[in-house]
Length: 510
Image (cartoon, rainbow, N blue to C red; front, side, top):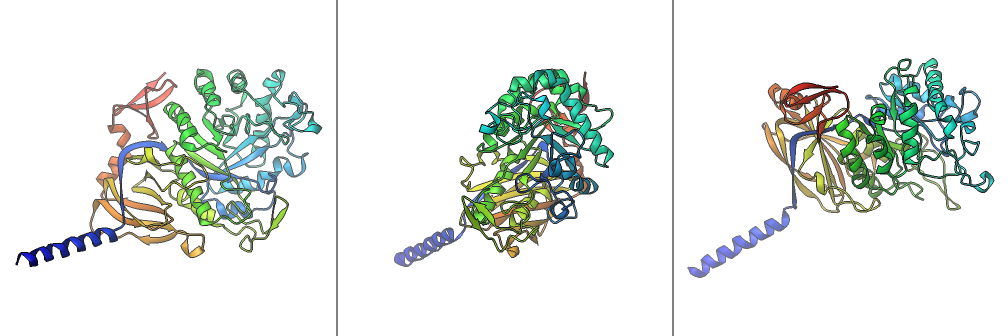
């Protein structure tokens, strides 16, 4: 009898062990009600191949922009070429981006301009070129100090020309990559030089004539904090600059963007990543591993505090729309049969997980915010997560970059009654943005789902009941601490003039 009992117990233990081995590992994600930055949107630059704008070629923006498009982009970046009239620079004059800008604006989007260089006659080297070439004399092209007072009036000329051509530009930047000495169009600024320009002359941007136009900081190559500190630490500069922007070439978002966002968001500033191309210059069409790297970069920029993410080219074999051409790289020509001109590429659908769902949302704190993120920009992190609230929805982004499936337990701050899953598991059309209804048998605030291997998952849950939805909308009014009117939580009492929420009441800072 004892032997039979021992045998029975052994069988039970073996069965339990086998069951435990069969069950996939589990990650527990807790989503809190704490609201962080509000997401303005996602976009790309109006150019392809050697920065040439599209002119009357409307293929890319027509497919990528607007809530009715498959991708849902809403921010477009364009070059402000160093012209005075917009009519004398061939393909690179102000006409180059005008047709695309009109489409984006008609579809409710945001357009902003970035100078690669002010007019050459304003510069120390007398040309729009950056000066880093033998035929340019290796001169550091900078804005001459006696021309600082001409810079913002020149931007006014650009804004007026665009306005006269039916486009109200939403924002203008100081400079593309002021920290990068180039042989193409470029202009160098030290942090102190940008501070002097903004502090003494930014008032000359005609905000009465162009109501609503915002100033974007110079956009350093590596999101260098010293460029932003020089502006943030000066009250006059802080009042003038609305958006702090930069690029992340060789610089991971959580290491470089987050420290800037932590300082700037409490002042009600926006944080935009305005240029990066992930796995570009490759001799193959991006595989699914490459595109998961892109998904993680998008997610990490959100975790770092970004309110806007703008990719580089719209059209390139490593971007959103196909070129229809072979790729020349290191003396070799590569033909990609799937590279049909203006065909939407898999990377565009990866972007749509964010652009179609996260735009207009407010990020929520999660238990895994601080451990998400890679140590190498070309190596996938195993698992990444982020969460957002938007109207009556809670959105959870989950990336499983491993070769094994994994269970995800999600604890939410509100009870939900239904949900939808967007799932992407590979580059093939059938594996991109598969939409399905989530199984929620009764209202709950805890759910468990399986994340397939190598997958990008967007869970969209509908909050149960009008009371809970109202609680979300009024969160900042009922919470302690300081918040902006649009729900951004501030780390300290703001010093910038404006109206804020403090301990559930509106407070005016004068």
